[in-house]
Length: 398
Image (cartoon, rainbow, N blue to C red; front, side, top):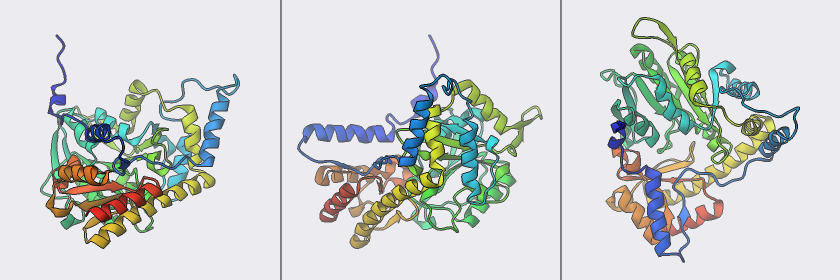
């Protein structure tokens, strides 16, 4: 009889968004006449920009001719896209070697798969509340997780505690679920901590394009020394609407060199490359052609137009909470609005209350950690019409 990975038995019975979908499905089955508005999961609603569609068509057309047909591509991504990503960073005064960039099918996959190149005896430091994938992927490996408390008192931006040692540190800025954004000085504190502790920061920058304040860093590499201690993940899901198209990238600088147990110097870039060439066959050429169009002047303008649309939705959400005197966070440099559940309700109770009485779906904060049990998340990714209608319903209900 095979032995199973019993670490899976330590996971919660259901992934957060699977439980949400289950509850909504049950409600709609019993109430087929009710219009349910979803402002919960971070899925986009705006179509891809014309420049991206053109790039996708070019990729499709290439497959129709023997002279341009593409079979297996490089697992690391085509050079044209890796160079486009590097140029995007250069536009923000950050130098990235294209060979340090690995194209993938999204940040969710990479933030989960990056654990493959690290030993299971590492101590993991994760914020609470946090995107569930960070936690679950390490529970699957049986790793020891230490939580750092993110609360309203520290603006949901925990800083290093010199009395706590960690080997791997997960940071997300702008944060999912709270919308909080680290300043340069705050990120420098984390880089200094990582260098001092010989730790690696796993930095999720999936929402960097929502930052509108030029003084706020959009990449961990804006901080000097970060290439020696940080891996960065980013995604086109929210930047360009690729949630159904699937494309992202991970940056593993060659400066990330550590010693193995027998004293050999080991490059994390080489390890990740070895992992990818074994377990990943590369992102579709067609998708990469569309992704490359994102980083053109025309493509980026179209993406930013969509991002402005979602940020306006977030403002509409925030305005209602401000009117009601409900404390909220995020919404300015993030598509997410994180707020306190009214009436002292816990987040799952409020989820059911909101669904049953206003037919609006959000995300219970408890799904992101203990510190989220009395908070709730709404997203600006809905349509303008649905966002306005949902907030009118909430305005009347609360």
